[in-house]
Image (cartoon, rainbow, N blue to C red):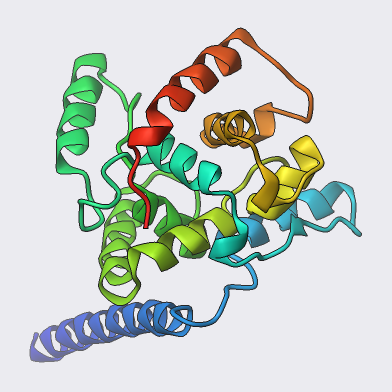
Length: 231
């Protein structure tokens, strides 16, 4: 009995050490990315693997550009669309989380989320798109790390450079060229708003595609862009 108890505690200790080690691994990467640019993300690697199942030579469209070479219109559009309290919260929009929880409770299933830009970045950099309690818990821990280590400007800079904007298309520069044939710095307000609208479902909008929803949502984002605060 004593031997079994000893082995149980030993196993628990090993699991705790492993969990702590993983958190330090995440934290070390975030510290490094404070002044170095990520070359890829977990989402990029996962998508590239899928693309290469059909086309072994497939490559992602991705090119990093610094913050000052990304259109101010796009910064305002993305914050207005994805996280209008970005400059005020510390990683979590608790009011939005409460509303999403109540809506999901009424529907009896998960139909609404409340992920902030830091939460989305945490998921994209390190995790997967699968919805599990473990992944959400880990996402929350990484989000807190991002907000502690990085500035708001750096969080938004990384986010705009790694988020998906088409099948295999990642970051503002690749997105601007893929959808509009211009550099990220040259995006107009309407182009920026359209890109922001695409974020929740980026593979649904190949270049040139237009829908009533896209038009209406773009107009709405255009009307909110001037009120969005960005770093």
